Image 1 (cartoon, rainbow, N blue to C red):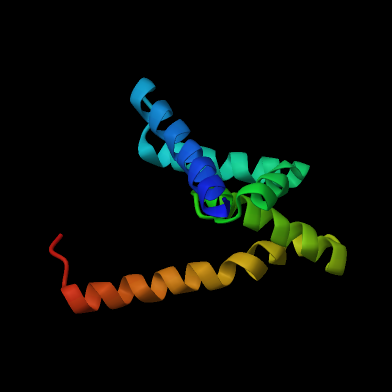
Image 2: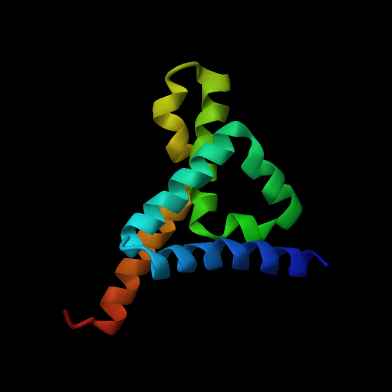
Length: 116
């Protein structure tokens, strides 16, 4: 049942993004930023955490989960450090993911020598 919930919620998030893309003049980059912002706002309000509790990876894997992770990191660091946490919290939780993406992106570029 967990897999079904994750599939349905993650699919719904992606379907909403596709519907926006098909019916507006927004570029994929605008939609991507919009999803991150929606995840961040809903995370700040505590709503996205309820969705993560329900759907697990179905809510964490889409890019809106990245916005939620940034806000959760900031809120945790604000509790720990005070206002300085606003500047360091975004990197606390998301740093590993961003670093991994950079390392594997560079590795793929070296291994497969893209033409561009």
